[in-house]
Image (tube, rainbow, N blue to C red; front, side, top):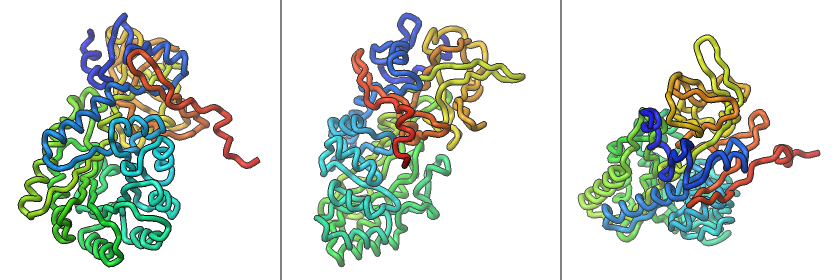
Length: 433
């Protein structure tokens, strides 16, 4: 096994093997999958997803003595099969707006396990949340007033108020959400006004929520958010069962240079212990604790397969031009995320050169991976990009007429289609003629 192969395998799903000099996942041959479903192709490994979800549940049980739940953050990637999987794992499903709510409802997620977020929920979003959700996380006073006006349309679900703690975690500026100038949530004083409004109007205020950002590795900044949330809870006067969510956002490694993956146990233990101490010092009952991971549950379960169409050598670079890129994975262009890759055939051979891996789209920013040591590959070969399970398909577009790829679930040698590939007809189906 080459050193590069050995370093990169921890980025791939649990079931990844290199038998017969080819990559396989969950006992499935990747060349056969690409031939059957086409490329780009997104594959999810069921065992890796199950293990990640179970880790969160078992760690909460081990470290937190009160009630606790795990909520799958649908924005990472949501489809009907994924929502069914989350429900089967007894996870709540966090939806943003009418679209994701409709997916969860179609999947049969029960009302008590459906939670609705959103920074500017439309009347349609709120009406759907009232009908189908068990919890609405209220972002602002205007939304609270709208909910009070809609109260007659049906029994309101539980309401949590979103706190803006006034600080951010160490991550990309585009994924920070808890600082003072963030568009998300309410500052401390405004949140107390919202709580007073709930009491006045007899609205079902049951908890608090905050989220400092995504893709962070150090849990220490969460201490400030927990302190502010507990101070608010004390002011509000929660005296019996209440709910607290410190969001999600725990990081994963996308490149071998960022390994090992951040410890989920460290994250869960820090929140649990800090929350217990904070409640004790304020004589507050322990809340029902909710964690909302998405990325750290599905990112490593997902792998994107691409076919090399052209090998192009310029004065100073070797380009592998593949059949996907910015349209199915805009994250390198948005956040400068560093990805890695392996060739599907003979991944253990000598890594002689550095390559730049780019897509077919009409943007110079359509570069997925830069200066990656890589073995020689030929046109027509497959490459596998790991850590592809979160925030890629959910952010995918039809730029340049790109068609969204097929998505399959792999389990014990069997591939099950979760989403069919888009067709050219899908691209103009909504057009008025």
